[in-house]
Image (cartoon, rainbow, N blue to C red):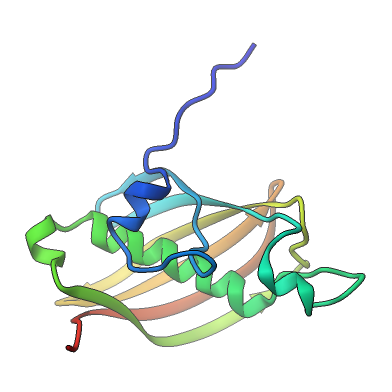
Length: 154
């Protein structure tokens, strides 16, 4: 019998780090995190996701852009978790660019989407990351992206 390990970060802990909320919070839990290096997180894909109403009726597929968004959210969690509460207070993470996005297999209801991101380069508050999305040991999507941590505007 295998022992079930609780997540390193659950939804309330994730919501303390990034501003995303239902229905746009696309990370359910964090399994591993190494300060400013890498993260492994999970998004459980269910039939009741709002995008399945129109993408596509009778053949539900998670939009690729949302898979990339889930990777970016995991990357933002990695960066924010690496900072003190004082360092990240009043800040939000913004996309700056997405490169080399590739979609290899559709993500459908019932999938457990594993999100893996690593920091490739960090300079000041700008972070270049590499993300991969996996389902049952198969690479389903990947992308390189840049993001910056900036002060929220009033």
